[in-house]
Length: 112
Length: 111
Image 1 (cartoon, each protein chain N blue to C red):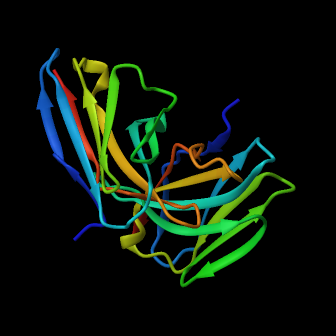
Image 2 (image 1 turned 180 degrees about the vertical axis):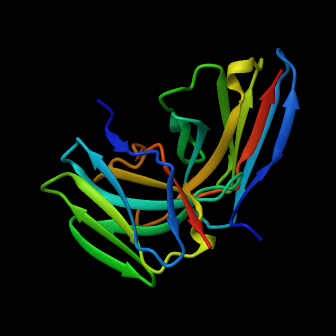
């Protein structure tokens, strides 16, 4: 079993839709959770960074962490064509600076 | 200018050639990483360094070597490139609160 599972999609939505992207994980020691956006032929760009459980909101983006279910989500409100990209989740445990675990990414297309 | 800069951005080479990918950063971070990204496999750690005198192997270090020339510079070498090293390579730094910042990537093709 992989440490982090992420549905690769592809996911296609109309402009203005609410998008939900998800990852599940198996290691209960994970405490730091990240979402990255990666455009084609570009490097991953950090979108959201959360510690432990709860929600974090930044503009149209909301990150949720449910540690009891080992499940994290990224919601995108009022999706735009410019949101079309691959979204990667990443996580790590405390005091393990080298051990980041990544999902394989979900490809999202927002149709105008 | 990008905070994490990788050169070259694209490189095509032949089997058996020595290749160096370079990374420099202006973020002032001590911790630097090299990852490769393959379709369906995600990001896999090749090497990481916590400071100039500290080099550590990641999960897929065979066939690769690194050099940390300064706090800001971390280079990845393929001593004798082979076709299955064709991939997208990323350098990253770790911020003080534990998040990773990536460069734009170096696309390597080994023929």
